[in-house]
Length: 503
Image (tube, rainbow, N blue to C red; front, side, top):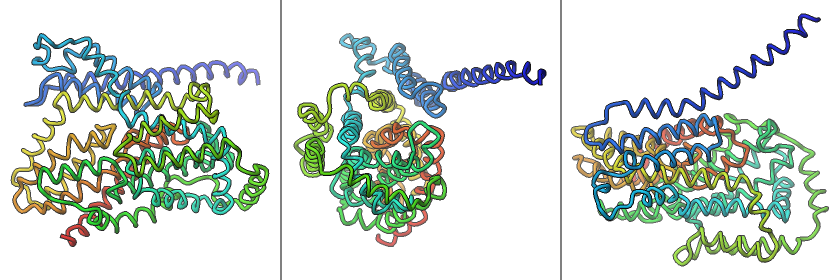
């Protein structure tokens, strides 16, 4: 016994030392990757500063994957490093030579540019909506109603979430508003009813499954309807101006309909198999939910006010997007909640998840924008066009779609992705003899929603679900790769032939 006892401390010390070594390795890995890329010869036709910017961007992505520090710290580090070395990493020699150019001011403006992005503020607003649902217990009430009627099986709850998104999607041109601002605040109240807590091993009881179903459903419906994602409308305008093809709401819907229905009907089940909840059937929980609803009694004043405010936001998101920016509508609702006492200022300042996600996503938006402003994305498009010379139309369609889809890893915004890459892809495709441009355009535009699943920053609601505490970093990247691959394969195997039959 004494031998075992005396050996315990060294074993503990050895474990602690191994843990520290692993942490230092994870912290060094993003730096090593960035430095190695910087040492690689700059590709022909690309300015050195653009290549070096890309190297640091890749280092940041590696840091976000392995997360040796919180994502917000990784993002802040990236923009600070680039801003400090902006004369070598961000701005061209021509810009530097301009006597009117002020390096310090331009570097700072770029560093904080992401904090002025409307999607970033809409994400922040969604977290505040969730805080209102939680504080007033209105979210708990809605969650209990769902559990009372559908909560016996985890799988039926998954389908309820998917179909709720489907019902809202045709009328909500922002998936952040729809999924992050409307659905997330409700379903965030479901896991605790089953003893499933965020940032805890119990998250896998049911919370992780429900959150994954919700973000996946948002991506599918964003591709299913022209009016379900703001960049879809931008893509439509670009297609018309560059290749002269008009895509109607009905044409878009019919083009994606077989694939969209298949994905919606199978996705909750696939998630159930690939990321199974520990709680699958529970006969007692619906009965308990019924008793808890009786205890809650009638709607309180604050619950009624919250319901009015949220419905007002939904109306503005659906019908008034031309007059009021969705993010501003969310801020208006937050102000109303503060003035009426639904929330107080401490509820805002104490919401660590909201601020962490706000900083993390804002810095990533700036970094992704830098890829375009340095000319890296333009160079990538030209190189892609050169590689397409002499390739058969069908092969070219598949190669360009694969490139368009996978390059989304470089973007923290579907709008930025659409703006930067879609014109290049359309221009390249239009130069290939025999290319069916109607089919090609439909494949490109309908891929915009489903590609958002591949990363924790791929589309507006992604950071909200990622920041929920139910989807650990390694799980999100793993599932994003699996589901992103499945969606892409389905688009090629089912969507491509179906669209070819249409045209």
